[in-house]
Image (tube, rainbow, N blue to C red; front, side, top):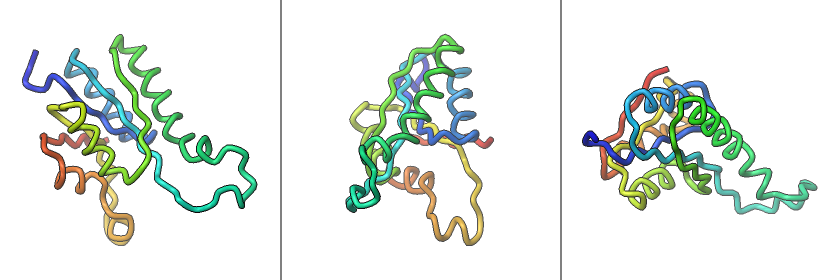
Length: 139
């Protein structure tokens, strides 16, 4: 086993994040945790007529993790999936620390200019706050 024996991969369902996961399968047979983060919402979703607000908020997270599990099955890899709720970079960093991850892997979305300024960069924040190395994989 190499230096990176516990890897955390952050996915959001985008092609870039799933590409990063695919690259991890090429690199390791080690323990891989795959996390997707659903945003925290403290408003009243009941006002919009949604029967199950929690399911609505976590649907994209669960969809991304289902796709990750399909990819793992095809690659013959064993993964643990986690749908976390909260601020994406905080949940990724917190889970990496809890899992004692030796590496975080993320896809690079390549936002530039105004879009990047307005949205911020989850990847940059993870790099700035993580206690372990962060590998950013371009699509």
